[in-house]
Amino acid sequence: MNEFEILDVINNRLSSSEFLGDDCAFLEDWNIFVTHDTLVEDVHFTMHTTSPYLLGRKSVAVNLSDLAAALCEAKYITVSLSMPSDIKKSFVEEFYEGINDICNEYGVKVAGGDLTSSEKIVVSICAVGKKISLYRTSRKFAKNGDCIVITGMHGSSSAGLYALSEFLYAGESLINSHLNPVPALKESRILSSVIDSNIAAMDTSDGLIDALYKISSASNHSMEIDINKVPFHPELSLFCSYNKLDAKQFIKWGGEDYQLIACVPKNIYEKLDKELFTCIGKVLNKSTNPCVFVKDGENTEKITKDIVCRKTFSHFNN
Image (cartoon, rainbow, N blue to C red):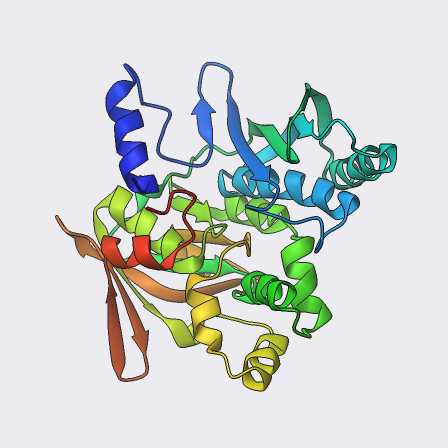
């Protein structure tokens, strides 16, 4: 089974699935958002390529990125840490130092958690955010004619991971993008201050095209982007040129950039700082079979569900 099939089973078996579908659930009676992410050793990270300190930071950052996409104020986290019984005290000290530093940077407090033993290191974090905007985000809110807007640069993290995995030299920016991502909370606050209606938004943790397809599928609207408008770091070009790799593959399909993607009316995009936000395309008409069209010069690639399942990272490969 792939992830899409497993999610279908979950939705069909639960008596209530009203809070499912987005990376953050909004609990209206408490006015809070809740999200949860898990990082597993040798699946999401390896201790050969990261440090306990950076693992602690990244474990929090990936959750704060989901809160950023919900346009809320990050407030609390709980931390569940599973690890081998022979783990060194220094690992625990450095891991929680990383958690403490990133929490202090963003005004977030640790409100509890759990400790268990396991064969490998597993970090599972729940994050809670407070609703601060009159309006909400959801993948289903994309509308015909919306500008597709992204923050930051794409492709850096996956290129950094590739370099670490293949023992290749890469610039510091690529490596840091993978090991120490920065959640787009600043951009989230800016976006929440200018919108005047609900908008479609999420982060690009599983890749740019993956995010576009998920919004397209949830909203039943096709989308069109120009891949040449997506910002990327100069170090990505140098890395790919030297190693005879295709930078656009990292930009399109590489995950863990933790940038925001939003679909907003044109008048809202015009209010945004173009140094922070880039329009890469538009939302098309409503469709019973929504897809994503990726323009590259004179060529256009049609992205369907089958292609997304084949090209993106999956925990459940057959």
